[in-house]
Length: 166
Image (cartoon, rainbow, N blue to C red):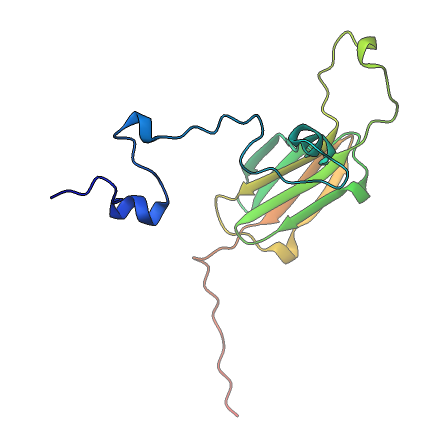
């Protein structure tokens, strides 16, 4: 009644195999992975992997976010970041800070006693607690501290409009 060779519906749509009988399961015993992209001039998987550019790690910028009666304020330490290496974008609901802190001099790896400073790319997306007016935002830096001041949108505020006769 049940055909042992027939695959189930799930096995057919996913391309999987049945593991009911251990001898039916074939294991790929070759040393190379099933998918092996070839990079020009490489002959093995390891050489192809080494030829790929390393993915740069992106650090997360530490921030303080607080509010005053009229503004949302975001502060971040960006000491050592040039203004042309900093990108700040503001929407009504979110602030995105991206940049790069570049090291001025290179020191041999074994020359360090401690290495705690972060050098390289960083990014931070901050979901704001309320809507702000991006066109009226101000950004300034003093002594390595970036401060963004964004006015809140007052949804409860009403404006009386005088109607004129034409």
